[in-house]
Amino acid sequence: MRLIFLGPPGVGKGTQAKRVCEHFSIIHLSTGDILRAEMAAESEIGQKAKSYIDNGELVPDEVLLGIMDNRLKKEDAQNGYLLDGFPRTIPQAEGLDSIMNNISHSLDGAISLTADEDELVQRLINRGLESGRSDDTPEVIRQRQKVYWNQTAPLLEYYEQKNLLKEVDGLGDIPEITERILSVLK
Ligand code: ADP
Image (cartoon, rainbow, N blue to C red; front, side, top):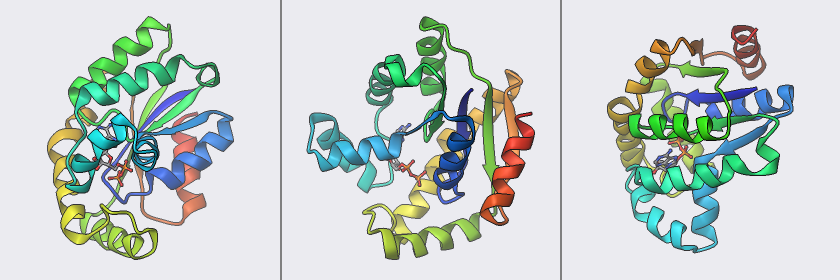
């Protein structure tokens, strides 16, 4: 099973991604987590990414495409994966198509988790109080929402045209939402 997860910041992609990965025994690849690990390690990629992330902007496409090209070729990605936070732009989606083509992988579905925007901003402000994530402040959260609607939402149409898009209501309790996701994948 090879899936991508789409949805605005705060919709619960990370939480649901973990549960869906457990269900299918596939790996969870979160580009947010990968970039935060690079920042913590103060690697070249991490240093480059930091200013974009802290401003709620997207890290350049070439950086993400390089990371994913390497990552999807690894042994542990050969039994399936769920991509969480990638692709986030049309060029990333096109790049992903060619990366996957080159290794004869095909996508099984693009799950779009949906929710009301005001609810999301509030959830993220609450998370920021606990997580200490440098980009969970009200101002940066609003910027990330804006980036989502401008740069990432066009992917809904992109995957709809490929007949891969599956929309799932992201409001409700955690197990209930997981059930909805699993049922659209049947
Ligand atoms: P969220 O979905 O809650 O905004 P993520 O953890 O997925 O958070 O991402 C945090 C930040 O990492 C993004 O705001 C962006 O700066 C950067 N990032 C993650 N994935 C990508 C990507 N595919 N392309 C560009 N930037 C990315």
